[in-house]
Image (tube, rainbow, N blue to C red; front, side, top):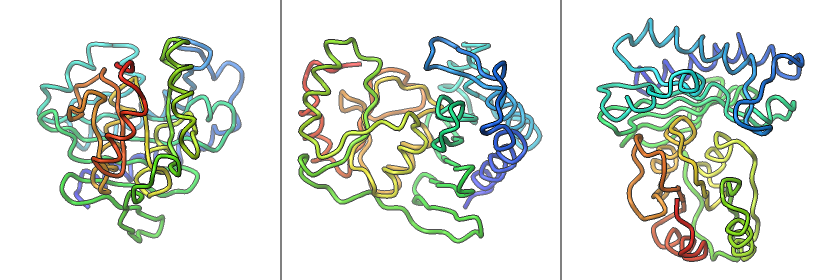
Length: 275
């Protein structure tokens, strides 16, 4: 494991212990606020954890551009700095905030390292399990247990669509398109949405689901996870078939066990789905 990947793992772990877990199922009414809608929330834990992580990154990697989800809310121009940054650290302090706020144990913390508009490392930490999935470009993806034991991650073997499990986020589609897509995806064995990309990417990278489908591409939601899936042997592309890079904020995303199953799933989604 590289120094920066280990640093991010330990920093997320420390932020969880200091700022996140003490607030889980202990949030007061004023500790939860809406950002853009009733399902787009921010909590005191999100903001405190991001401040903790940003301060640690500033001490350890002062040359890096720090891009946090909550920081971009305050300064949207931060998002544009990822493309040209020599080194950037992109963080989602709590992914699955609505679950966290509801006391549901399905959330995670994510960090990615970007160099030259390419993700070179990604960490998805599970505060409740106290373990992390860590991927590094060209070096594979691993589950790192609390005692330091490492297990290499592999995506699932491809199956026929009728036997496959997928997670999909369709809430950003117009109603008519969403109805069409959900009808098409009824051909799958199981379709789920856990309201947390962190845990969905963990399921994909460890071989427990076969596909992921997303429309909104905020980098803190997808950089770490998409790298994990690729390093675990999966196929990750935008809906137009192009390679996903950190500066992409549109174009949709589809992950699959391999290129052939990606193409089959893309056809199932239908030509009308663009992002």
